[in-house]
Length: 254
Image (cartoon, rainbow, N blue to C red):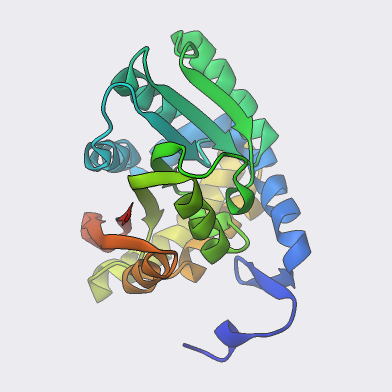
């Protein structure tokens, strides 16, 4: 671990910048305010549609059943929530949570269009301070959101608190490619193509530059696995997808 990772001052990463810890949430909010309306389109372009396969695998790992309560954190535009809504059925409930009001607005509108709001609650919430009762949730997912959280360890502890014993957390996030060649190609793509696409589609290259930088600053697979374990989860493991570009970590509350 580098000395920079052991900083004791009141700053944190915002992409490759160091910013005051209290400012990060506001800076992240500005990014997602900018990209909210085109977020799903940009995900398709950035991943070649693969993000849908990655999310499908995460849903399969969740083992969610009818009647359960699912919390989807950083759920933004509601694509995972819509899928979970069908799995839990009329006896279950899905909570779509996001800290960003603009993303939630897009998600709510899309869920209304799909007629999928009957068993979905939409809640503006900070992953670090989840406003739910202890031991109340069967499964928590957070897809491509943990890297934007100011204090990831605190967020994981908050998730552990609200899960029922035996409940599962699944963290789907960009990670570290396992092949040096793939890593080199992926880095070139991220820092060259993503800002250009962001400029063309949202007229905002800076936000997509931040998204690329935030991926590089996110813990690698083993480091994140250790963080999940440190938050109190057991039987923790991760699954690499697309050569480690993405990984899904799973932990169980004992």
